[in-house]
Length: 243
Image (cartoon, rainbow, N blue to C red):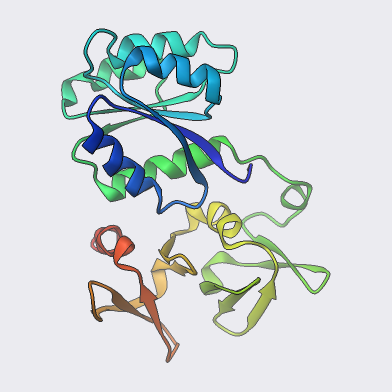
């Protein structure tokens, strides 16, 4: 996957654009490269900025989101489209335009996270390392060697300066692989980002406790240390744990 997924936000309401931009700031793979306030300006911006993804409001004056999406699909480098609207009745029509997803306003953080994961998978390509790894295992380079870990054995992963530490049930490993890369590779194994520096296996969470200033602490099975949960991730985390 490329370093960033270039993203364009299109909405005629400044507040909605600001809200979505703030929420997208929680995802390390997403880079908002521009904003547009109409369907017409969305097409111009898409030509100029070459975004990978466009978050497109449906209800806009003159050229609405559906018409804009049709025009975007005809571009030489057509971006993925995520429709956003307060009106659920547009959902069926949206997917006729090959939309990758459909978000309802006000934005739900869990739903947005699922949308981002779906987008990330579109930009993830198998590496030579992945093609040769044992099925279902995570390949990680440690001190010049490739080791294969069972995802279910990993309790949590933490980024400390320029080193990423993988804490398993029986050992600890250090790698230079960025946390965001491991996050994209562990999406389907129930891992969740709770902080810019922490990725946790939700299957081993024992307790979520309030801390201070809206932040929380997480108790992990078999570990004494408590992990910090950033308040930006608390709402989405609680929703995932309640499933």
